[in-house]
Image 1: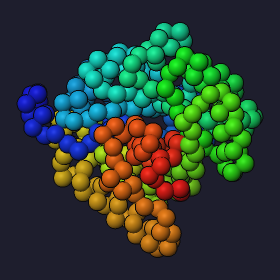
Image 2: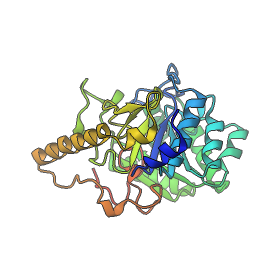
Image 3: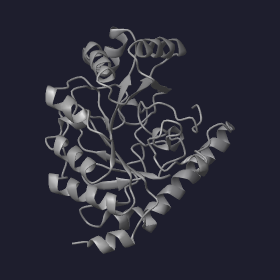
Image 4: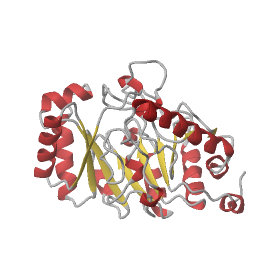
Length: 307
């Protein structure tokens, strides 16, 4: 068992952790980077394991956690894990499709220190539903509106195929009172991939830059899109030792080298990772949120390139 002193001695530069709770989701989005859906599972991470991860995260310098999936609210221990994260002083963002929000969940979402994020694909129900594989538009839209009415901090990310769709979706979200809105292209991972091997060209170049992800099996990786480069498992080692270890650094260096070569080969020049000065004390700060750079369907940060 890792002692608190050991964990604190291994403080890391990671400030944001994505906690990928589950592969279970009501939707089967055509672009889902980890191929979640109704048949998805919660993995090998138990309630106790996730609690331990949260405690270790708070102890080694992490300030923000984002609960993702799949649909994180479908995990049986979701509410307890969020409560624990808030209780120990972590800032929490829940990335939900907002298809189903029972009354008790709204109470949780109104806790201090918690914010919501969601994806929105079109102002037109048929286009949104075609992307999610289910009639979800009306429910998601209604719950976005309710979150705004309740004063819950909310941001929405538009993933669309054209500038017109993005503009229409943005106007629709603004009519609901959403202030933090961004857009991103579909990144070719998971169901959106046309090749069996992940292509680093689809990354933003900022993997591991102040952030990391833990998946439902306990595997740690530099970001949600580069999970094929697992650098350790919290079942076997302390979180701090993994985040500050050589495997993590080597994976990040390798990804950046490959990504940089792709960028040079394509002679694009515009795809540069966030400047180190852009990494704020609060990675969820809307003025410059580097955690947005690699997140599926997330809004663009002001310090990231327009890919």
